[in-house]
Length: 234
Image (cartoon, rainbow, N blue to C red):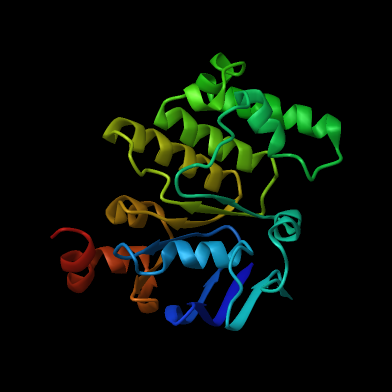
């Protein structure tokens, strides 16, 4: 579904990504792990069209997208849940969810999907008339995921979905991610909780200083002594 070939991204003289190559197959959950500053968010933002690569290709379902603006990438079916959630704080929960479907013209299906999202996230149903900025951190994360699902993504990019959440809410968010994968959506996950991410993922890539230093099945990465010592706190 997604293939990245020799991707280089610069911020002025700083080389943020140095020849990244990876792939995500349809139906997979792939985890990206690494220390802060490794380039994980830069990679997701480049896939979403917010950064322009200096070199390399991004292929989504066989077509190049590295020169497309973000709205066209969303229209093709790649949607990101950004780090920090980025919900619209002065709009209600319901309005935030409706904004997730702004590119869709199938109004009856949009209403049906909205009902499904509110059923999947009962707390959003309870707070559908509240402003997004009044929600707790966990509720905002659920809203950000729900908003993305309203766009009917073929692949969902998740950037640090557990950041700042209590252990109980982290488990709840990962249960939601597990359900999304089971329903058939492909996932590319950047996550600070590397152990939990690898337990849920099919495969994983380890980024270090803008380069991929390990790539393997998630199970093999969990067993790797180097990965355990560097990223899993073992």
